[in-house]
Amino acid sequence: MEEKDIGYLIKNINDKLKVKADADLKHSNLTLAQSRVLAFLDRRGGQATQKEIEVYLEVSHPTVVGIISRMKQNGHLRCWVDETDKRNKIVALTEQAKALGEEMEQRISANEKMLLASLSEADIKKLKQLLLIIYNNLE
Image (tube, rainbow, N blue to C red; front, top):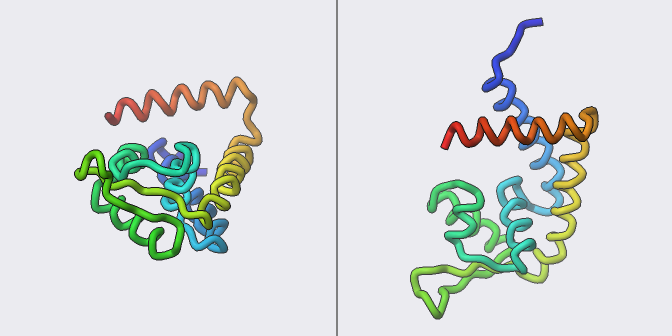
């Protein structure tokens, strides 16, 4: 078997996770990126600024605008300008999306368990440490 470099493996793992997640989320009319926004907002009490979402997802402003726009069209989000700071846009979950929030957290947890099923707790801890080192090298 041909040995694959680490970057190749990381990219292909990411691609496979995205395909699986998008298939799992199709029934909810969500993509993986949208489910991450939903889970983030759910953990934040249902709302955050658009900038906070940008920072959390580590994507550009136009990318977040597109994600939020599609989620708004699908009835998952509502948005308004922050009255205390007009530069900020507040993004909040709709009642429909709040119902999905817990489901998203459960799916994320189940997928993580499946992904790491054959690893020991020590392996998982070491993997997280190593991935954080690699991640920080790219900063």
